[in-house]
Amino acid sequence: MMGPLRVVLWTLVVALAASSARADETARQAVVAEIFRIMRFDKVLEQSLGNMIIDQIRSEYPNLDPRTEADLRKIIDESVEELHPGMILFTGRFMSKHFTEDELKQLLAFHRSDVGRKAIEVMPKMMQEMANWMPQAIDKTIPRLIERIEARLKER
Image (cartoon, rainbow, N blue to C red; front, side, top):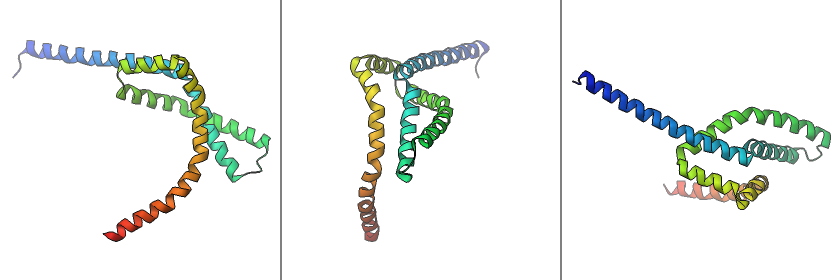
């Protein structure tokens, strides 16, 4: 059984550890927020998702007129904007969980560098091109994948 002084000391140690963890988490979140600001994360998210959706619509409606496309883009942008707070919160928590404060500061320094700024500019374009490439790549891969899986299951 713990005496009253020991209980007070343990309570103090636990409280100090918890406040230290919260301070560490707050510091990491602040660095993540700065990374997001520099990356223009909200705009990158909006542009990337919007372009992928528009590309998919264009593939299904090749004769889509520019006015309808502009109307659809507005609807998509509004919907994606609703995702921003949740995506930023999720991504911020994920980064804080998987990167130390020092690692986050290194990421921040990278994004402030010339190469980092170029990466911020180029990545949305790469994501869009990858989204265009992916369906063809999957179409080529899936038949062989199914064939291999079926062959393996027959061996059982």
